[in-house]
Length: 171
Image 1 (cartoon, helix red, strand yellow):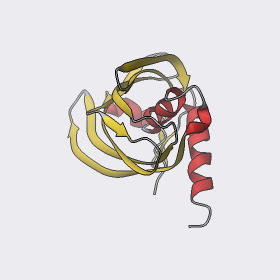
Image 2 (image 1 turned 30 degrees about the vertical axis):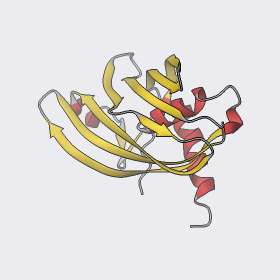
Image 3 (image 1 turned 120 degrees about the vertical axis):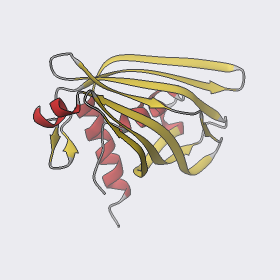
């Protein structure tokens, strides 16, 4: 399956904020399970995506990814897309298994994406692309909002690609 690192920004944000102890929540692998509702207009390209994460939550707490948004920027700082989590996602406590994350991805002015070199050989070239992310995670009555600005996607994509490759070495 083709690697889709832009979509994985959301997954990495989940992992970076679920716990003070980074070893208690981990991503073992991922794949895009389904692409639905592709919408193409003169000014945007959008689609629904179902991201399937192979995840371990060993925190002893059920975590709920209540909301999430990533705004994508090109190397000149111009906004060119956004990714939204469309409904809350439950990460049961002490789970090791698959979790579906429903997303809505929208890319502004899709012709610029194709002509700018962001899409190469069917994959996004993430060099120079950054994202601002906002995610809200709940556990019981507690809620934590995680906001990060100017997250470089190439570093994030490399990290997640290594995670997936290690998980699928024996496939």
